[in-house]
Amino acid sequence: MDRVQAMQVFLRVVESRSFVRAAETLGLPASSVTGIIKRLEQHLQTRLLNRSTRNLSLTPEGERYFHRCRDILDLIDDTESSLQGSVERPQGRLRVDMPGGIAHALVLPQLWQFQQRYPDIYLMIGVNDRQVDLIQESVDCVIRTGNLNDSTLVARRLGELRWITCAAPSYLAKQGVPEVLEDLQRHRAVHYFSSATRRGSDLHFVEEGAGIAVPVSGAVAVNETELYIKLCLDGHGLMQLAEVLVTQHLQTGALVEVLADKRPAPVPVSLLYPHHRYLSPAMRAFTDWTTELFSSAGLARSPDKIKAPSTDR
Image (cartoon, rainbow, N blue to C red; front, top):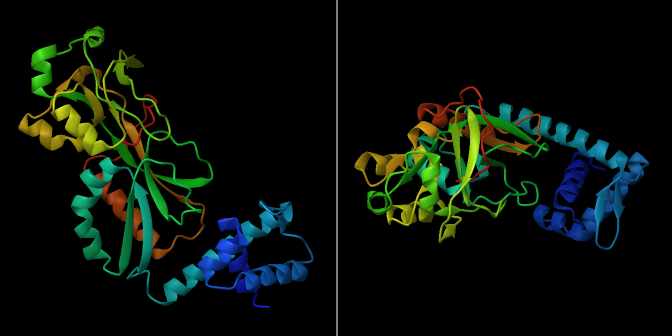
């Protein structure tokens, strides 16, 4: 029995939670995958998986074996990559996922730099704010904003986004410029909702060192950043988002910041990936590049002060 192949098949079965899906991704007959797992369990003289018609789960021994196998295979991949010179010239396919605002404002405008530096990496960029299952959907890493709550992933802090409240001059001419938070009672906002929260009526501020959430009425809510900005530009109300996403509109006067002395707390931005002791060269290259990208944009992390609201704008 090829024990390395058996480990690879075992990991794929666990990650896909299905013998059939594992067989499809490995290009093997389903019967071969089943036979390999059976022989592996016979070799180890222990059951690794609990099987039923609708469910597949790890035994306690299987869970320990899974983590050990992952470390061993990662070490093998890392060793082979270093021998092939891919550390100096990373290559391969890398699938990443990120919010639309970060993609359009930061990543895509500088993508040519990444391609010039790493011409052998094929980058697949997914754009959404949905909580992606990295294992099930074969995503290598995600960029997410807000406070993190998934302890099963490794997180690398990239920086933080400075949030502002702004509106179109046409809207402010009709409704007036809010000077204090109480003025928001006579204003309306363009609301933003994410697939995670499904809520978007509150605007967040900091006053006298304390975070404050203020509900502001509105007539429309969206879950896409470009549309969110477009509605604000068209005078539908106030909006609140990362300053870097609307820098050009602020410079041209198409948008005006309000309540600047009560800016919301900065929102942390992190890159997350599954727990691997050894990152692939391509993954390491993308992680280092995005860290440089946030630093060069002046978005490197500053000391934490007030807990930021969770968002993916």
